[in-house]
Image (cartoon, rainbow, N blue to C red):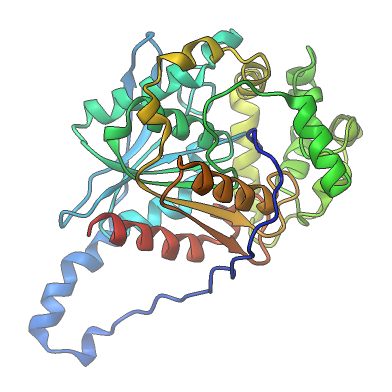
Length: 377
């Protein structure tokens, strides 16, 4: 949850929320047999199950990733998850897009799922992780993808664009906008958001950086999952973001009802992933970010690579209390003004919190198809 943003709050023009669109099916009984025959290969694709593969990348770490090759010359999507569960967060998009003929690559990032989980904070460098993703693309002989990041995955996707822009035909940043590489000041962003919104958006980062944070999360997995995937997005304003509130909720073993977009079976799966993988690796993403471990490498990035020339979409939840949509609108405005996001658009989803891909899978599918169609022109 919850990657960092380094920008100033500015007034910006409101953008109408993404309209809800519905897909519809075609009955083969109502069309000629020949046309039905042409449709059958596409309908059969719904039974395909993407493969789970493993690859040892630079640095010696083994990554697990979901892979489904594209059909009909359609583009491939690279899905880059955030904190805390892994590629499983993309299950709706993996299903919908692979069934529609698109290629899909969804790695468990370092510290998650079936991928290696080093305990050293310095290994959680997005500089290194960008090269890991490039290794996977090279191994699969995929020259270009549409990159889709969520939460911390947006930071990794942004670095992939800075270091290996040739791999990306378009970019989608969900919940967290692109931010050009630079030092991160947690106190500054918390002071800014507290002054602007009435609470520090990233107050929980202090808890995540404490020496016992992984132990606390591992000993209280159910309450941690309950606040991570809240039934009401507003719960984060009171029980996650303010200083000390995340620790208080988790150590008190508080529970909230399941959100409408998460079944009991899905919740059990999330809890199983969190319990099996442990919290040390996932929390190291925060610790690495707060320590600015990559800052001495930023001057190696060519100035031209800091400009995201590709089509770029910021997809935001209207009710996200941590990654506020106002921040994305401001980032887009700033990026256009300063010239490093010349082709950025912002879409805001009504009735949606932080977990856009889980809360609004239909709308996400429509948005991603729209990006794919533009990228293929």
